[in-house]
Amino acid sequence: MKKKILVLGGGISKERIISLETAKCVYRELIKKMLKLITDLDKKTFQNMGVVFLPDMFDNDWIQSLKEGVGKNLANPGNRMRIWDRSDKDKITLYDSDNWRRIEEYKNFIYEGPSKEIACSLLETSRVNFFFDAIFTRSTGVKFRTPWHQDEPYWTVEGLDTVSFWMPLVPVEKKSALSFVPGSHRWPNQYRQKDFSALNPDKQPSIDSVSFQGEWETFPDINNDLERYKIISWDMTPGDCVAFNGRTIHGGSGQLRPQCDLKIFNTKWLGDDVRVRFKPYGMDPDHSKKMQTAGMKAGDRVDNAIYPSFCLENGWLLK
Image (cartoon, rainbow, N blue to C red):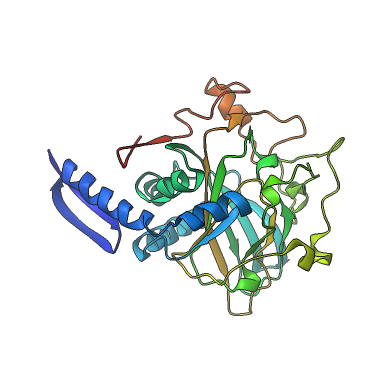
């Protein structure tokens, strides 16, 4: 069987009439080439520090495709879109998530891009599930900084085997990039996280919220003791990414120069030990309704058609 296939990655971007088997062979070789860029030190760094910088992971074809997708997303936001900050009429910080089913460029990246293989490599597993996508955009010159937080306590799942890819679609300086507290993913403490629903200058109704009370500890005052926490970030260009664990403390990504904006595409992946958990203090984004509609129960592995599964078999990821 032959079909027209758009081959993306490894510097290849063109339409050719090829067999499906040939396409698979081409894809395998591209992935092998790309995965050689992920060293044993990268894997060790990710496991020990909870964050690793991966330069030049995604070629320009993917970046341009995702830019088109983000443009569509901004023109037609999803029902989870939030304005986190509005310093004036034209200066905003925007977040949106879980739009991959309706934005073809996102869906293509998830299914055909190399993120799933990178996730398998860093998590040292042969199987991952895609969780959700997110975008973060800031207008030129915005000074708003994302509060320090961890991701996994907000999610409708629980587990250590998670990885997120923070991908800038425009150049970003170190001082404006996302910052991390290395090793914090393995801290035993449970902290009261920021309720992002409080960042709501436009008074948007019906947004997800959380309320961390009880046994949760006060969040560390990281801004007043940056040296102690050994904060790290990087100068980044499109094609680079930072991979980090869902429990790694992170924040920042503000302080933009007057002529600089920020556009970030983010994907989140789940590994072996992650299970569904409906959290009584709230979830953000809250996936409980769609999980329950799909028949998922607390304690289940996140392995359902709504969270695509990718298995590494003989070097080829099968969906």
